Length: 180
Image (tube, rainbow, N blue to C red; front, side, top):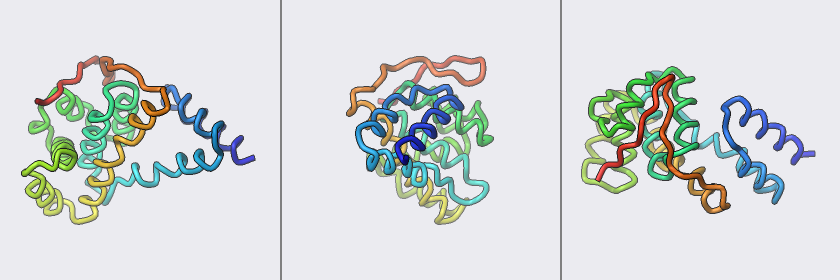
């Protein structure tokens, strides 16, 4: 019964987002218990923080997902961020390696990159997010920085990883620029 509900939920998600969720179905079919845990992940990864800080969250989850993948998972993050009202042009700037020009989205993007790398600018970026949006926004950006990597890493581990591809933002296609 639970497995059937999980499968239906995964199929609905996949259809809504034009996303290949075969790895999710594999998890559910392998272990209902694992499928329940997979279904709970969005409670962690989709915590966007206080009103007005969604751009910071979107930038952080984008950077984290890019660190783990440059294909379908990143496309899904882009589509979901745009659906939440995050400006597509700011997301594109981050993908193109121009996060400093991307306002709040770029702030979240740079924060996640710094958190992942344990870079010296992390404290400054954290303080900037907290000054603008409060401590809850730092929590959301931290969750996003850690959580965006979960799905691409899990997909590769399960043998469902995809290769890099050009990303689509509206009618525009862009390539990922990796920072050195």
